Length: 259
Ligand code: DGL
Image (cartoon, rainbow, N blue to C red; front, side, top):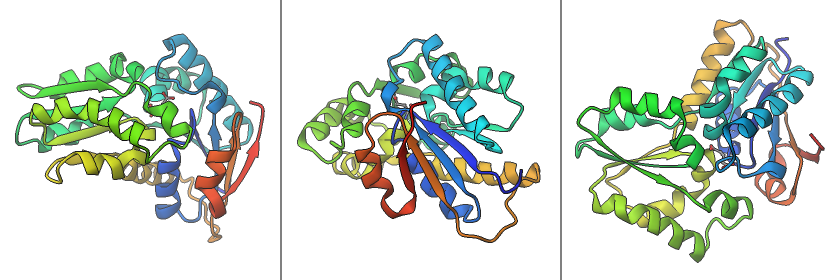
């Protein structure tokens, strides 16, 4: 089991930002990454559909003998983590919007969060934000259309920048000093977000924290790979493989798989 891979899934390229951190801090660990881009975006689907897709992805990874499951998607975590944990007897780690560090660090008492519709309406997200947000205003914005643009590779285009600006300007007018990126896809937009927001605003992007948490759990469960080989990343995509091939380039094998 210790030499088995870490299993990761997302609706597309978003979780690659977490994969990069896993490779950095866990260089002995092999990974299998599922990009369910045939069904992207998850963020506007029903809860039952998100649960069904998340269970399907987890089954594929469990059959591939993965020792731990990483849900590299805020939408799948906030809507389906409990169902996954109920059905699979292996450790499951999810990613949720980094609301807590934003609330702890704000000086203006105003924070902004950009996430998908189904993350912002989920009960898990609302429980977390209500629990910590006394006296602090949280400005929520659904990133309509952003995931589709990112999946097409439209990351540094005028169209994407304009759309982002329309979502971020009202937050700037409200004087936020923390911006929470509540969707793993948005990590790829950080360079253009930086062109729109002043440098005094902190961007909360929890990829590093998640990778550290995975390391902690592997250690606690005695699941670390003792072989000091350099890692291998295997990526399976069930839709268009081109964009993901360009991003992953020499860091792993990308193949089509109809899952
Ligand atoms: N990357 C995902 C997230 O973190 C899902 C985006 C989507 O498919 O809508 O929410």
